[in-house]
Length: 591
Image (cartoon, rainbow, N blue to C red):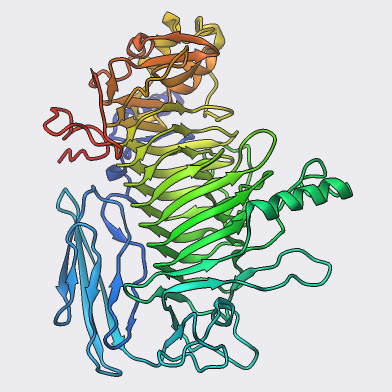
């Protein structure tokens, strides 16, 4: 009996000892690994290259690449540890330029070094082979019967993308388009829709480049007139393709379709216009897609299914949707890079609602989306990381419209930083869960909604523990204030919230909060601190009750933040000489 008691005492002491031992970084029971900043997360702690370099160059034609970096502390500094004569690198962006000599078959060693603001570094070493053999050319005055050389180029986009039987590209082939307009014309199959589809498959070249200094323009051939005609035809025939209830042009083609074997697709320097529903659509997961320096515009959309310039249909997912914090086994789109593009004029023709937008991602892992501009994305988000996003970075984009992380099933380890959002920033909307979402050093001229819609939380609030019926009750504020910081899921810090002005009840609203128990239940999982908020900012307690920021301060939010009259320029820049510019917003450099 005594031995049993001693065992029980020893077990209790051991349990107490475990409680006092230092825990693994921010690990909480049943919640997985939690990190307050990306620098604390092992998969973000140091800068890392996620892009593949172009390893061939054409003699005398400018070589131009830019690496994509994830992790570490922005901004970065780039340098060349090893490079051939005449090669240069932009120290801020990492853009590498070089005019290769006429040295057929010769390889040149290169090593790029990136150093983050905290002094952490990474390198990428590769070699570039100068050759003519892997390069094929297309020009508006070419001929598809030509061999595709620089002197005798092909003529059409489809000859390059979908070569005739009997022709096989060598591994690593590069197709270079000269400046001018290319109208895509491919009729649909008999009794089917879907004409003007440019297929990217295992028979297509992996690298698509604009000739240096020239702008090839690919016209996919769709228009508002064609969309209206399609809608009228569906209504007249009674064959409504939008779930049988409304018109839809989802299956009408006029787009790029990345199908089987299209991994390692790279496109740089094109203008692409007049697409239907999607401009780039892909299925089943892909590895290393890189779209850079393109002008993508005029996309006509309707109905649902996320019509957008870039859309990734969900890869295979296996798991329990209701298991909070457990990522399903997923076929991801991995190392997806979108850099320096201009997305504009997406039209949405539907009687009600909104859907899709500029980019919509399902099951994307290790994406870097940076230095893009989005404008006139009507009735949709500029960017929406919608479902099963993991390890993605959205950095230094200008979005004249909304940004969202929807969390349809889940989103985990996502960094949103140094962007300008002229619209709504929505983190959480659909009935999935969020974890390790870091929203920092952005400038937002619009509204913020966090843990919104049907977002799941790990634990429900005990309604018997107090009065949580409204956002501004003392018990709601206490529940949030006393919740452990190490259990937070969404981290919102270093941002500028600029009241957009306006008239009526919505004037200067920067934050919309649920005015019921959802405020305490969900917002206790939010770390909101060290932000600069416009002194004229107001909050809407849903629905239609407008208050000042005291409801946030009472809950302990922004205890280390600031309030001031804010005036930012069209790119989100605080006035020169502002005392706040170094610490807050898109152009902040805290280190």
